[in-house]
Image (cartoon, rainbow, N blue to C red; front, side, top):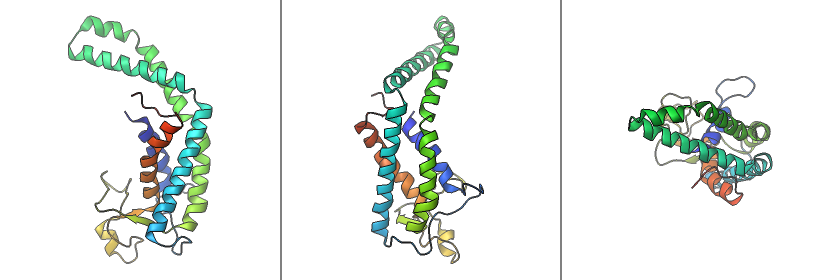
Length: 207
């Protein structure tokens, strides 16, 4: 399980909605300060890198990385061993491992709390930047994708404009497969988060 991706996904959900009203909204400006597709792409990616570095610094300060990785290694080893016992129908081994279930659940909860704690700090500047800064700087869409990226059914997690939206003159989408401002930030963050976490030694990858 990629915990880095999960945390970024949780962070990004709030960027699709009006933080105060709770309704779906589009971030961006009809008359942005930053003009041009290429410049917008690099500028938004720059914000993604800066915020990733900030997130990594907060994690490094607040989370005991040695303890977190020990818990992750222990819980994953137990889950793997339990699944192997269930596949082989080794009831004796299953019963033995089940005795540790409450302890492992406690460890999993502690790991979740350790991962979520830094988000209580990083969430506030992220929201302030996205609702007070970026909408003034950039247009609603800041990049183009060669293919549609709306892999999740429905419009809850739309990354790119649809053909119907592009054909609607009243819609903010200039072209089909144009990437929304928040979506390009989300993808940029995914692209650089692993590198930044490895450089700052805050990665949750045990390999």
